[in-house]
Length: 490
Ligand code: ARG
Image 1 (tube, protein in one colour):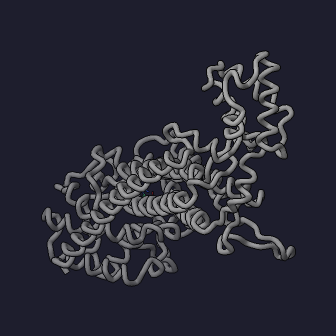
Image 2 (cartoon, protein in one colour):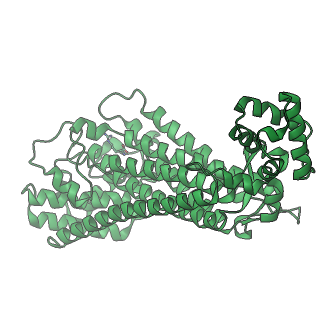
Image 3 (cartoon, rainbow, N blue to C red):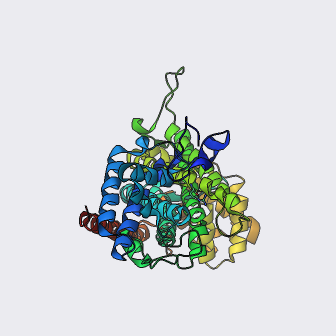
């Protein structure tokens, strides 16, 4: 300690200055867990009083000081090593040495681990809610387009016609799994490490289940060494976000390509322009959405890299593990909301899509299927249609294309097409809408199949929304309980 810098009640002269001071301190980044730390302090203090570890009167003074610290805000904390130490110092500054009883039977190790779980669960729920809104947007737009044929691609080459509804539902299914991954991660995040102390437990008669209850956790992380050191939940949260962001990046990329082809027009609210080229309407929001995936993957990789090889039980490396995960969860949540808005407001150009749907002889597979249904081995049918494809062009009428299939059948099998199917049936199979309607296998694009799948998706969204609401409610109940208990002391 120096005269210029008296240090703090908690750190004394161990954190008094010097070149490492800035480097050691996480105070600025800890703004993200300021609220969490106050809640953890309150719950811990209430439990200490209930267990007779601190007097009710002292608990009341601590809790009143905490309320004052909360009102003053994170910005009012004195310079310190981190938010935990700074809040404790602020409490001691307000009520004197009894403030130091708040840190009985705990360590910053279990404290910070509790704070980051407390904060991350909110981020995860917000991300889940964003996925639900995106799924709703996908289903809503899909419902309007069960009959809107569009080209489907593999290798970005025209492959088979499908519908806009079938295409959009393909993303609804993927985002539904992202919802599930986030909810699954939430289960493992929402466990309380508090009461583990530094890692080795405490001789005080703490009630870990009670602090877990007051903080809305669904139980504790039992082993105290595991509780203080575990950060796998951060890696899991980051990975769930990165997987969602990867899903979004594919959707964004598709819509960018479809805009380029002129079959989708983004609403102005989701487009940008060029500062020099006045005619430009650019899909910038989708490009940024695509870009978020890179950051998210980086965060997931960075988190695992930071954790790799860390010895038990606590190492200061861990201080660097969480802030980026909170940030990326928020970025991914925002990108999800943007994707939802872009999907909900985009215009699908039905005539242009219909026009493109048959391009590149995209109904060829359907014609081969038809020949195989007429009794021909599929491989022979494939050869016939491949032979016809050499001469069929996008300008051919259905009649002309069917004639070419007939010709190819004779060439490959020495038999006329009519041995297997009628020319009319081939002409009809060449029509993109008929082709789509014929593919009514489970999960296929036929409008009535998609109608069933839309209904199923709506039900699943409702179920997931109820799951989120139940979690939100249980957190709100716990917050209310904690407030009520605190009120009993102050
Ligand atoms: N700011 C620290 C962190 O985020 C708190 C824990 C400090 N513990 C310690 N043993 N130095 O990890």
